Length: 299
Image (cartoon, rainbow, N blue to C red):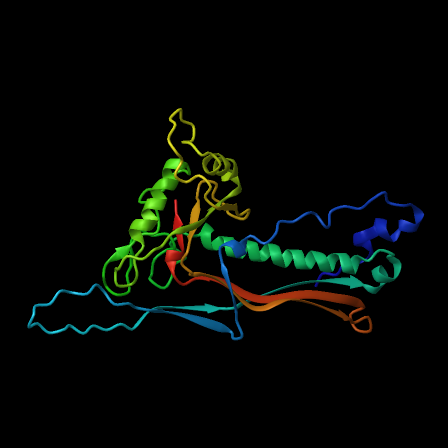
């Protein structure tokens, strides 16, 4: 078990012999929460939560004057169970270090624990998209997140939530994906639904290209005086996305969830009489998941 003792902060222990002009390494600026732009937060009070799809009715058939009405039925579709995962990290300071250190190390490192938890959430959430085509990560319909053949629960075929051939982000590919979203917007029975793009999500490497494409009223990199159909679209950068060429569109369909079991809790135990140390830890329970792949399309 690791403990932070005087040898880890020898210069601080000797601080009375000379004065530091400054100390650095902690309290660097950090990004605001980014995962909340994609995931809906759901508070959980159990070990796991279930998300159940209800199937829909299909189109209404024509009948003859003396014909009989066909009675159809709906029911349960795909079910997704998300089990909360527990995360924890801590540090220990020896009594000698606490007694001889005039600087509030404990308070500073408590703040760093909170930041570590926040950054962990960003990575865990971003990995949902980072693994969007990884065959080791499939969802309730047996498919990866971005697939050309998601089955419709009502048995009316399949739908796609990605470009047939992934393409580098550009004005043209963004127009193609916008068209794809409209074409593929269907419910479990295959009926057309008004699924629309809400937010483009990019890795840091595509930030400048996004500025060029969405910030130009006219066609990008063209002498044509034609309008840019995607001008002014909403977009965001997610710093934990790892594929520099993969980009996503969040739609108006709810289906991506940050399931929060309990908020981060920082606790401190002073046990000088037993371990001769002060123990501080942070813990939290949560999980990220997808229950409806219509919530995201990929380019």
